[in-house]
Image 1 (tube, rainbow, N blue to C red):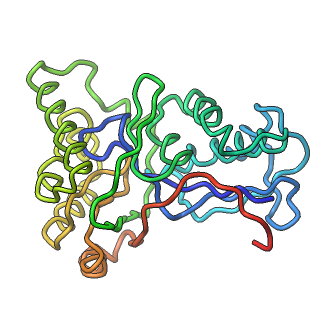
Image 2 (image 1 turned 135 degrees about the vertical axis):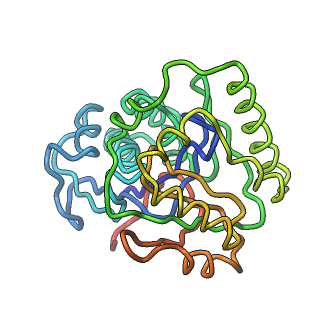
Length: 272
């Protein structure tokens, strides 16, 4: 039995630690490791599997790049906890809320755990998760720099306090972003990915990513942002423009993925 878990892009501009989108690059784990390579005890999925009482070997395979801002750690935790609960006889759909609670607590912030668990576009706050509709069958184009970023180090660059004006600005941007997704207003969506909580500070150390965000917008992306803590850049793109936006992004120092918005964690049967 294989459990497939999507990667994610989190924060989505102003939605710091709150908004996320599931992406069609997966972390796949197999109870018993009959088909997939066996994970060692240091693997993020194996640690979660053991923490939730999982026994025996666990196979694991993924093309999610670690340390890039695509939710590698969150997907691994969701996969491991889901595998342990399924091994214990739980139905994954019935256990989904439990999987999310375990993964969000272990991850320390829920914005990656939510889309990897539930799929689609998610909002999470105060332990609750809501899913939003996705307008116009949008694609997600991700530019993946060669370098990596430590989430802990990146959080260390953020200011400990912000002004009332900046807080008000971000509340407005998040409200517009959520409203734009809910109504399918692409013009409002384009105007709502600015923020004053994390991107300006993190992008100081990632000028190539800042340039890629601007390039994506100029090439026709609906909205673009720093993915998670970076250094990836992600953008929502209308399907007819996805290849053109991808072609405009740098080929030196990184590569580009054109992805779909994905469903949440699910059980699939071998053959893999």
